[in-house]
Length: 321
View 1: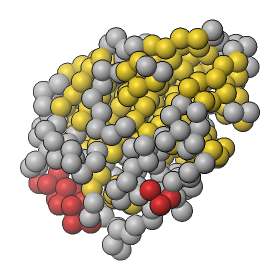
View 2: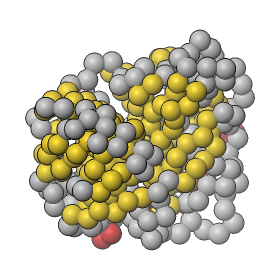
View 3: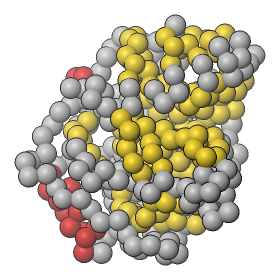
């Protein structure tokens, strides 16, 4: 999914100096962003207060939207570099196309994982014949320097491992949880898990104390370490935890996001993750000139033009403001 903001704010993220090295309970509110003609998303990362959780650098939550008489998601071809995109659905379908030739319909609780590496372009759309409701999350994972120039590729994993406890089913999106591991390719120590809780569930989820964590609420009423987390909000939890108490007041859906704090500082502007302003400028020029990012075939529409770069140089802001 693209960042369709026509005036994207540059962010320099990463660096261990801004990691909260102890458990905290920091509730992040979303910023509403229009995505195409008919989809509005709630952007949780980057946030005014926090920019990364481990290598997770971008989190959008959307829906549930009634798109029975609407085109649904329509994101034209656009570029990416230096990151992975994670498409995750609770309801609906998304048709993915990219410049490597991938064509894949992604359905609820199937992993669509695109590694942009040095450069890729893709589009996302609701199929012409689609389900009534669309509900999901789009997330980006920053690639470390050693892997950010890798060849672009796309993975689709329809079957994912699960971890269960009374009233809880955790589906492994990325990384490892309680001995189970996702088949999705990762480049840093990371975890992403979809948590489905039944009403009345009161459990403790095992965590890695060296990881920092956050929890995105997708649906329902749930208390995370005693904090009510409403759908479309994200609770940052810091590091130093060995377990996480969860109590569901109703049937609920969450996403657990975590990982080893990202050491490198990086610049994120529009749909690019780089290290210097010069890299970002070159990527924008390459997209505008039709080089490097390839071509998406089959999408009924023109590629997305890049917004103008800010007049001032991109300035480091660190992991938090």
